[in-house]
Image (cartoon, rainbow, N blue to C red; front, top):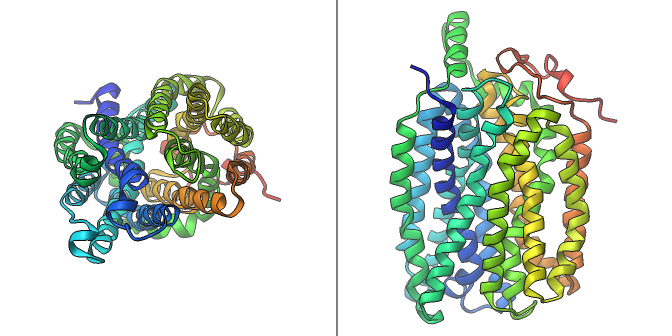
Length: 445
């Protein structure tokens, strides 16, 4: 018996939110705690950069996770692969909660932290693509953007939970207690969230589109093909182009939602109370959660490309407005800056699930979508907080960071202008090679 799209979307969102809670919890902790716990002997800015470097390490593993888990998702199925990725993320995050500090075991502490971060990144590399396909391959084209946008609520919802838990712990504990053991409680909570996510995912069946493609492939070839190889050799142009469309969204998200905490609270930057930044991020996440499904409804009416173009242009402009508002040191202005940035992120997120799914054939879709998504995360997202700190250290102004972010928006805009509208594509009949799918790509000068 078939499943309703709300059930499928809810299950996909639940698992995605848990994984992003774990992933962003690390990022928030790297901003607030890890520089003291694992890198205590460095200058505050250098310690923060080292903490962000361990954060970036998780992104390095994401393409590997995308390749391995994406391949498994195309061979073994979307559902089983998503369950595996969720378990990997949950175990690694729980172990971080138990990790001794630098003061206790010395250099072994940051080394183990890096290993666990690599596991987190590997798991996340296979999460988003599968979560999106679980929804997009269940429904029809009429409301595909709307339903495919639900897994994209995972990042803001997961980040909201991470920031909220840390904010509550920071409020009820002294700073010494929070830095000593309070942050570990938030990591330990992931075990409970993983159990909830697993239970919900166990209720969802494999996607009908995948089952049909698997049966057709086995009938035609007698055995499963090599989807990862086919994705890379047959669709490399589309994978790179899709990845480039994410640069503004991905870099922007990590500046608006993560680096802003450092910028506002670091003693060598604005040196304001960290609660201002955490509250701003939580407000911005609520804005994103409300805006994503609303904008997705619009995407099903006017198409994916107009919204993507608008978001890219907005990224270029808001990059400078963002730092202008932050530099006022006015609490309301900071809230507006972050909310505006995450509204732009919401516009990208409302479209990306459907857009990426509509680019590739079913047989290699998990591999191709995961690679495109995570390549952008490595190139644009992983270095964004680290580069932002470095740019401020070099130039002493947030406008240097704004220039970098605007450049990411320009790349997204150019890439988007070189794609064609995909909203009318039949996902069951997309061409099997890059050449056969070339109608989805405009001529690139």
